[in-house]
Length: 234
Ligand code: SF4
Image (cartoon, protein in one colour):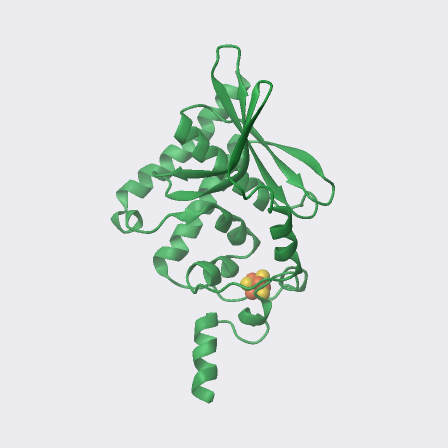
């Protein structure tokens, strides 16, 4: 009963988002948002805009570590282990929410009636975080899987490289709503085509791979504008 209420509340949030989406013709013409970008938005809306609008990307120690962790799961493959079918690098999409991406791993758990329930697992470097960005990305995968297979996906897991353990994530109404709101916020940035101003926060910015391109301490407009200003000076 609790599971059904959670699922229905979450679906209501998705339904409202789709309704608003369909009422806005401009939004419908925009390209799908890539699932990993949701995490970028929650880390820093400016980071999302620099990557999405200005096509800027740079690696640092943290992104490189993430890539190493993903080497195995980035190869499309599948395998059966007992009642679980495991699929690696599965392409996901939700046309109505206009999101798409690739799940690291999806386990399909066979039920007594022969049906399968998907269980997404996302690999992350480090250890469980105090923020919800990783959970939002995973929940967006669950929304795609529900849409693709027409079944309720109520739980998944984050696998953290440092602790090498699965951290279960329940897709409750609060997380589903946060995920939908994040998708809409990303959409709004793409629609307005405006890069948010930088707000320097040492703890966050010093971990950001775009630090040298963003100039959060000295320049608060877009990185493209900064680059243009440098060229004019030359
Ligand atoms: S350097 Fe700081 S403000 Fe700039 S994108 Fe990264 S986290 Fe955001």
